[in-house]
Image 1: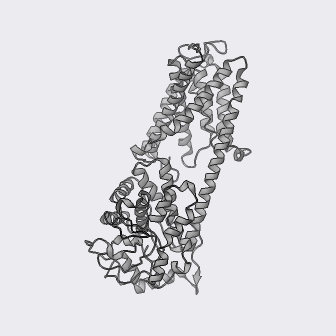
Image 2: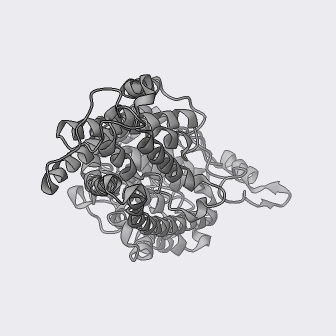
Image 3: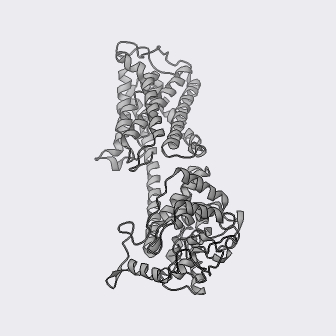
Length: 543
């Protein structure tokens, strides 16, 4: 569910209400006959799961506990083996309601979490009961253990009990992943084909392992050794969680490194502050619309964020140069994708993102750089980032020009599809923007943000000086033909993130607003001159 000030979508509210009602209905038989519950099993398991959920948010020990310890599903599967379905649905409720959740809509998140786990525990207990694998006893606390039909303890032997345990674990997995996908569609407006893609395949293995551990706990619980022996089974699970948490901490360190690189780029090129993060976000929108799995989507987000990291190898004087670039300076600028690729070559988890960093300036018609690739030769990630890059460049307000409306930017991308951009990526972004709200942002000289505001010079803010120069030099918005080059390369680009590096004449693609160097190689049908021309006249870098 999306955090923030925006209200929860009505579809998500309805889904949460239905799930909560369903969970309550599943637990109702037990709630109507509380004295007959096997409290000696229900209370210890509910307390243990509550401890597992609460530990990560405990002020005294939260920083020492693996962040994924809350998902101790073996405890819930133990309840499915030891208790009837209605009673098993009660076990996860206390822990789910007090566990840690992400910021934003905390009450809704906790309600959803509790309902999801209650439904999963109930369903797995039902399957276990139907297969004759339940280890519940017919009495507890002086009376029958269930609020419904009495269940017979399993008596089939060792090999057969594994089938019941595996079926119960897979049922738990199916319910959890199905509800996860449903909430992605309802709350995050995720595409249907992407919501569930790969979720069950990734979760089935761990859930089968959880089922095996839960079965071991249940057998020990009913053995002469009692519940104390069953709890010791969780020790190896905790160690596994700890190791997994170390992996996530290492991944977090990598992400911190990426953020540091992006911040360094923002500081060096103050005109495009925040651009990289938004390109990453737009790339994710395209990836989800194309149905990419979670791993590729994450790699594509990294590609969007790091696509301009090669600017760190470009002299700052070129990025901030006030006059036109010389041919030699343009050649230096065109090396930035290769610089970026070399910088991230050793970061293994980036995967395909490295190709996007190297090739995001290529054009579909083969007139891009650094290698002049065309069509399918251009890696898929690079084609996605090129579209995301151009879109953010056109919809971002800079100190030297105002942003274009989202609809205008999308129309421009569609006009340039087939020559500069991949039509499939453009269509995916257009569909995603029909569902997602995109807020254009000021990316230069903005108070706050990632980096300090531009220095003031001569008693007047440099922003005001630039604006005055632009006003004096411009010959009118989107006006006459342009023949000058940009004064700077390296703002952010539609087919990359850099300034125009060749003259932009009549018929140049307006997507060169994003900084493609081939202003004169655009759509010949364009009746409007390249936007690079306007910014060249104003002495500003196209962005």
